[in-house]
Image (cartoon, rainbow, N blue to C red; front, side, top):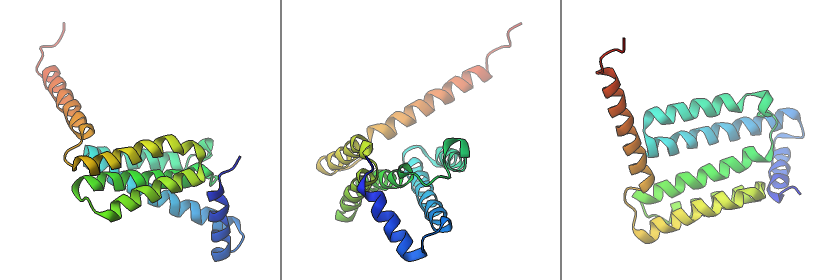
Length: 168
């Protein structure tokens, strides 16, 4: 069963750009670009600029790999856009308890579910985290603290290895 969102997206797309392969590929390129930009922002907010650059690079490489059917405008591409929008809005809720971020989070999750029914579980999880953030009052997330702890541990191990005598 195909989710109803894809039909609306293609109907809108074809009404604006005409029924052509170019229109489908243009929509896929825009969707991929927006998803990559939001992914960069999400990872940057959670793990820093270096991790964000790697995430964006890996996403870009996977987005052009024909073996992954990445150039075939599937419903997953459009669903990922909604999930990423929702995740970004949820993260922005931590610093600004603005109604617009709550609405963006909900719209992103609803959009993801409209394109792919299996997005309901991650959408519910991200939505619950957004609600928890609003109810709890924001602040630094456990995820961010966990990432920083792992980073410090990796730095400590790298420092220890650099100062150990060579094994002979």
